Amino acid sequence: MHCPHCQHSTDVNRRLARISGQLNGIREMVNEGRPCGDLLTQLSSVNSAITQVAKLILTEHLEHCVRSGEDTDEVIAQLQTAIDQFAKLK
Image 1 (tube, rainbow, N blue to C red):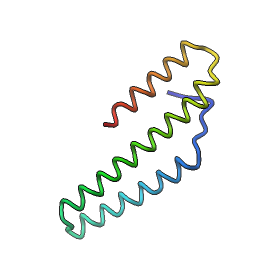
Image 2 (tube, rainbow, N blue to C red):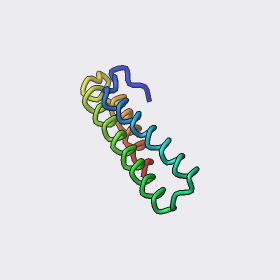
Image 3 (cartoon, rainbow, N blue to C red):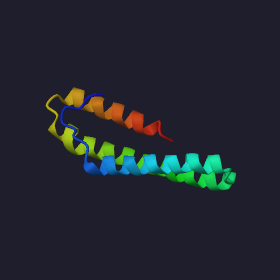
Image 4 (cartoon, helix red, strand yellow):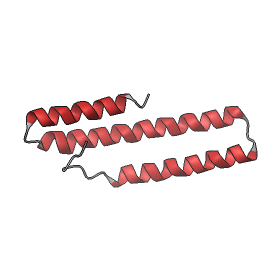
């Protein structure tokens, strides 16, 4: 799905950088032999953060692409694709 109107916010990039840092931290925890419960807690946190980024991207898509779309059928198809992709996160 290509959206010519989407320019993702700096918030998206900031959140993705934080998630990358969290994943690196989890890798270090694995190498240190940290307890499974600690790893699962951190993985759950990353999963939640990814879901929040996806929500932000979907919101930006609604605000910028859907609102400015000229061809209603194409806009609806793009929105449906975005919703389907979001639903696959869980």
